[in-house]
Length: 294
Image (cartoon, rainbow, N blue to C red; front, side, top):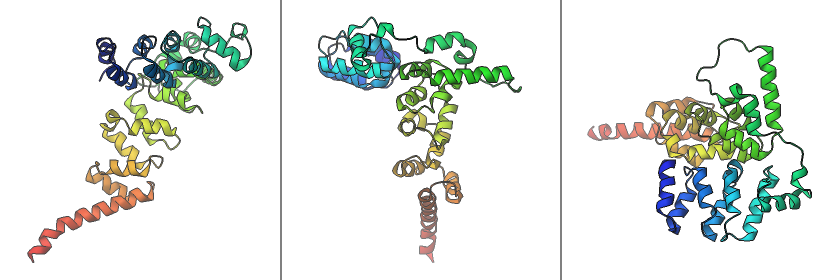
């Protein structure tokens, strides 16, 4: 179900606990819908909002509105604020966030030094970070361009987790490529779930032997991704995909691709063995009726 539809349903199901729970648990629900529901939902649903850590860091208005919810437990709001502050997000207009900053860091947040922000970096390097080139230039990169790219990378690395998540969501392919290698899984997931990511990038991640396990799980659990046959094939070959999942996907491949798996020494041994066994079983079944006629 698309985001705008879920947003529309959120208004139509106001006060209906079970329906709102499904909307809050749906990854396609827009962040703006989360923020609109955050100050008015029940204690139980407020806990669901609080537990979606990626959204809290990606969209400031969610934690801002959650702090205004009279139904939410104080301990739940404090926990959400502490989490945000530890990951670099402090909103000076939210008293609970200011108190959390004092608890976590022991200092008044209004006196903290200026930090690198996603918005600031994108404004400064608009052409490099806001545009996704459909076709990369064929010419060789100049030393000045290479230095600028290095500078952007260094500044991204110094960002707080919350700012990296915002950049992963808003930035271009180059920014996503940098942030997909981040040590923090929330940052990796923000890049993987960016509305700007392409099937080509997802294909690259499905092939990657170094991709974050949570990102890979997001891909092989996504029905829409599995509709792309090449992505499904890449997942079967990837040794980081759990064997039960890879074997289940292998059963949906075309015979020519299973034959290729049976010959491919670069795939996990169990996959290769099961591909050979599948082919032998199919061959035996084809010969069976003919053998019975003699």
